[in-house]
Length: 250
Image: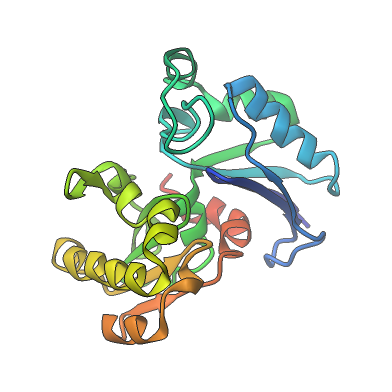
């Protein structure tokens, strides 16, 4: 039976667990705050340190924020900053992360097969039904996005960096900083506005709202979004680590 070490890397925290083939956790999830500054070597060492506290696994799935193509980091907005999200970008870190082959580096560190995807894509792998056009939006430090077509992962769109209103990106417009500033009630209305605005863009069959802050969306706002919108638990970011291996395009 193949076991999977699944690691969910966010802007504020990194979580990990080991799962069996059915997606059942074999160990209680571990979480550490995301350390900053975070050059690639420290990132790899942090993930390796978490794995040392968990049962042995046969393969590794890593979800991390940003544009990841074939395991290579094209851009990662949080990890290039001096002290975490909403702080200044460090040019040295920006250079180190650009083009960093995360899959190769982690494969060497773990000496195991490694799959590296955007964190929302791994989250989506844990919840999609596999029929039609399914969009996954994760609400946490910022906004994550993953699109699935007939159960297959579509090319990644870094929607979080697109402008939405008042010069803000989606990342800042509905991210954790704005939620705290606005309060859950007003922030929930803002999330509903984003959903309404994106509906004609994607024409999804189903939209899944996940991430750590999805549970904070007010029920009345969820009800107004429609029956094709579902709120899913944040544990999908780890559970999806198993199924992600079957949903990627060959």
